[in-house]
Length: 561
View 1 (tube, rainbow, N blue to C red):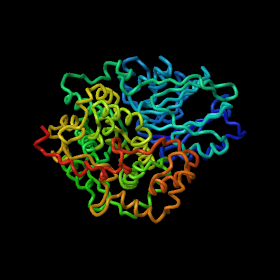
View 2: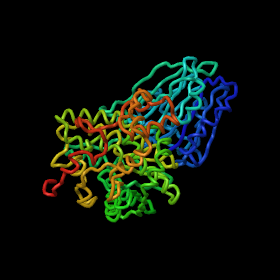
View 3: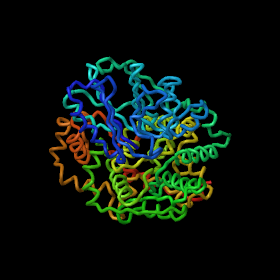
View 4: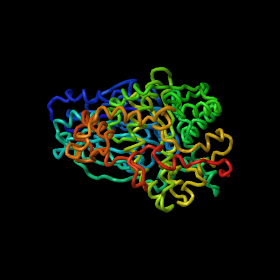
């Protein structure tokens, strides 16, 4: 987890005036900071906040290597196959940093080729002063964020988070836009340091196998047994992500996704010779179902477990800083982010874990949300699953990145592994739909091998913001009770005039939107719609506890076979 920031064609006459903007993402890289102007382009500048996870000695950026001294790289992410492509192509790395593979792959086949050969998560800005080109790229699911601001005169600014661009936007009067996942863009670097877009290219689609699978050493063998394939692919996705020079931990809610990941991390760490206990972390209010379930899992897998509790007052107090870090006003995103933000703060303050595994992505890939029971056909469910995956970068992936990065942690999400997701997308839609009153049935069956306690493996879906709730009152009800005292009926009635784009439909939505506008005025387009369950026309709240199925689902152990 790092923070990248770049300017091209700055015309203020003093580029140092922009440094304060770069400092706004310092939380993403607390270990070190560097800012450089570009040789012969005095109005271009690259800045980097580093969280040192791999190659502490030589991994600083902007990266330049003696072999290709005219190539500059800013990169946030992890490339899991960097050793495999080094061996396959005979590259001669000069550092131990995984990001160096981007430079070598670019020199071998160009930027589109380079991006398509990366097994990992990334957002990068690559500058080639010999070719007079600037390139931007972002991974398939947008696990690592990147925003861009540009104008018609050729000025361009790039940053991991939009907060590093908002002050520049005030002077440029241009839109800040999220860089699209799965794309690379090529810009011509002009003599005056300004840039001109040459092309925007999609290098990978969700349903297709990634090009890096052309390297035989990268593949997991696929057989005829679907459940065995899923088990092997998820296990491999976790194993490759153990790459770290810093301590590894896991978020653990006690639900299926985080429990499978945490159990595999503990198992694989022992097998690989990692000699410290894996720390797991759960959070909730008094009486939280998540804390109780996570405690059972931790005892089963032998982790060093930490339980974090928060009061309703602490949760409400955190909402504004959460929205600031999120750069979103989506209701379910804000609700779920508070617990994740508070547990991340605890991890940084009280432990030495830095690389944090989590279960994000499984619900989108494997139709884990409760409303999938209402899908009219298997094909409709499959189509909705694909839509959710395409939009992950605006919702769950955004939440997972921002809440952890706010505290200098690096999040890893094995369920969004490229080979795993492309295999799952290839399955018959009938296989992916809920079965025997149980969502994510294939994943549960795949790990019905003693990895987890049976009552955890077959525990029904519960949203993260619901699982942290107390036994007395749901978290979303606590929020709504507080907001009822902050927003009047007349304010809500007038919201379409005040907020014509995505006007809030509830007082909770209005409250979040006002906070968002305080920091990111005029940028509501970053979130094109408010997340709500599909196929439920009368549902106006994203909480799983508002779905009729929540009360109806009773997973009978006799129906699991």
